[in-house]
Length: 266
Image (cartoon, rainbow, N blue to C red; front, side):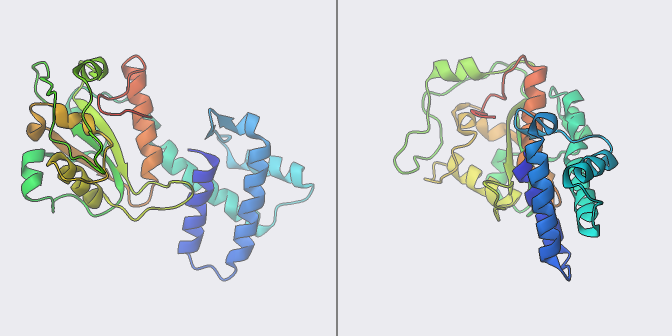
């Protein structure tokens, strides 16, 4: 979780509360965030925030920086910073998860596991909230790649890649071939997309429609693409992008630095 993502999550929560003096909390958040940014060498690893385990330590350090006792707004803001931070840090257990079978994914909260062929007929089962999702292949046989898949040509762009690229990206001994998200914070803004709307686009793209959803497009060059499963984890209160990155990072740790087959980027 970056500092921007953290402060955006806190501001979103403060806005939701309809506070009597929102500017007071907003100014306090800005000042605390500036302090955290100044202390980046202590509170950041590869661009991601790593806060002290005890929020009182951050409060004490901020008081030293400020040269005065915290006011109520600053104390409240730091409390909420830790609330939002811990929501995301509850997912680290993703570093310990396995990606080999459906049961591994069920254990960490994924649901659905519906074949693409069924979702092409009716996608109403997909939750209409933000969250993360995975594409799963349960077949034990080696994948058969297609020179030309079923993905759509958005703005005339060919979504297909060479067979060599597909073979180079394939990861053995896992059922997970793509990890995605819907509704995650991007450039400080909260998109309105949901799992249902996002996966609807993904599905239409796989039917050859010229839809601007090229993330995970490699799956459409699998001969058994229609038999792949979509599963999802609704995250109405958390930032899906942060959780998605956490899962991808965990996958890479399990598979020697390799991303899931269809994830071209972290």
